[in-house]
Image (cartoon, rainbow, N blue to C red; front, side):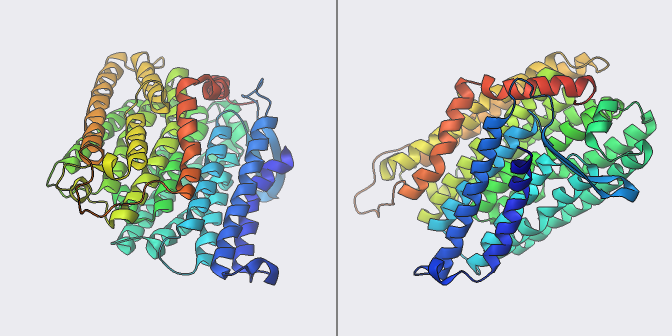
Length: 517
């Protein structure tokens, strides 16, 4: 288990180096480009297999305990250690990252985005995977920061070199926002480490803020929270996200929404809640207020984009929907209750599955039509995707109703638990204020249903394909292979939420009570 976790984190880096080397003659096949893309599928597949074995070997009777740990001195003068481990909070995110990266590599093997050499594309994809996996596995504040930053450069180049129209401006906006947030976050992490005398996240969580004054905690939460809020993204620090998603290639959008956004909310749960509880209690009402503002803002932006004649981009609409969905995650965290935090973690995973599927589907539509413009996709006949490509239309409708939180699918439980958490927030938080936030969040679910049902009506529903109109391809074999796991897991998480909550709940209970053992 210890070796497997270390291999899962480091393996993609070794694969990235190998991708840049010349392929052995026997492995080149007919096309060197296909050989390196096949290498990407192989490496991400091995990492996914390792993550699944980790999940199977995980002690499910003790999910609150750190498992598969490695603890090696790295910089003794600063007491910085190579400390890795997983518990019930980090394991689902680790598996989700490995799964989505494998599906993206598989999809790219058959549908490589237009751009420079596949060698660089595969290497960047693997570096991105390694940095994301490390973020969820490291247990040292300095290592967390390094892993957190490691994903920025590969995502920048994936957008800038393989993206669509406006890719360079979107890539610059992405990296400037996130780097500025990270500088402030680093100051907060250093403040905690210097004041507490250690950067070890397990020791700090076990101390539960007792070694830090209230002033230090408030300052640290403000600094670290800003950096995490940019990555989440929290309104009003979200403006980089729609541009990045609109310009990114399909697999870039899938990983950005499905994995990278989770790094910010994971930092709130892993670092700020257990290490600086007094500081979090001070800022929790403000965090909840920004969260529900994001829910309403994201929904209204989507409603504006879906209007006929608005020339709204479907990728941009889904990006704005992410602002709203991540608002529910932040609301759950702000309640500082086991119910709310469990809801936030569940919503994290559900959003990764459902929004990852949505971006895959929109990418497929853009490949077929040459655009993601909603008016073009709707067409003069009133949007007959069901008639043109019935399987593709059915999958898009499925992903949309999963995203709006239909009971029985993954999107329902996280939002419901976050709202329940706001109904009875932690001791010391204003219940009237959180009841107000709960009511606003519940209204946001109605707006979410409104714009997603409008998307289904405009893009999917309508009559059969008019005579003489060019047909479009329905779901291809490689698309079916890449999307089926996401559909199956969305249904499984919706029908059997105990699979995930059984992992997260004991870990969250202990984290809020005073760290991890």
